[in-house]
Length: 390
Image (cartoon, rainbow, N blue to C red; front, side, top):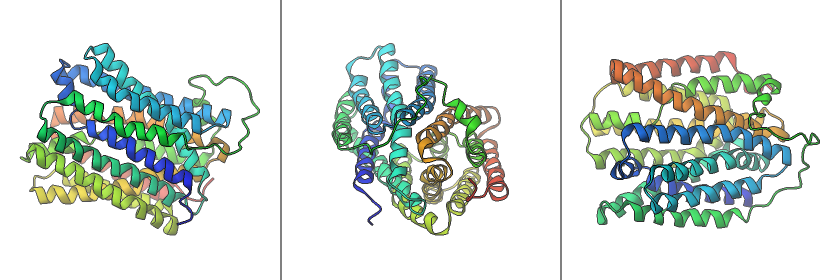
């Protein structure tokens, strides 16, 4: 596997350690916030501000990375901020401090995303993009398996001791920081245009980007508007009668399937086409949400989360590989940063829309509506988009 270069391995291990730290805290974050006095409304505001920070900053820092011709410093700073935010959450319990720590975490993600994905793209050819991005997503998701498992084991022996877990989560974050300093930039000239990069200057890229990029990203964003938080899937499983351990177990199982399937899905996409694998993922997504409108046993939901893991493997890394194949190399960070920035905002809206539908009409209409929109997007990709367009 000569296409898995030193840089790809370093970036993948960094993501593994960082996701281990983040997902270690994911199951207990709402419980911890409630224990220090946060209401559900305040938690919602906190997460909204955090995601908006990540979304808007992805495009700006992606554009800045292309403008300066640098990648490694953005990756290093981004992962450092995310790692430092973990112990900050345990230091004080004042709401403003918690907001600051959470925002720093998401800002770190915004700083690094475009530059990191551009580095991955630079290490691949058109024929290996799928497997390179798939391998990275696979390693990243291994962290999403290890993190919750460690949290479950820790809380079994030390129930209620959440703040210590935030400090422990800094350890894999620190390993990620150390690894990031082994990254080196290739000799890349900065863009000749020395005009300063404003915070919203990445929006101009949309106007001047290739037509194929706009068509592809438009379809991806429409899909994102129906792709709400996984919390709704877990809530449905919980309402169906599964206990807390089974619910978290199903989530871990999903991440395990995702981790095991992402790399093979990338290899398959390089062989038969990114579009075919991506559309298969959309079909699996629609089947999962349609299935969630029914009640079933733990084995029924286990099967749906198996399909959900396969869907994620067939779409998440593939979409970025596809974008990098239809845009100029000099604009890779801007193109991916712009897409992931808009994606973050659309994810926020998707969760709001799904929550409103659930509240007004119940879980079944919410899941059926999501499945229906996903099928419409699938038809759009089938009819309206060609993989080879540029």
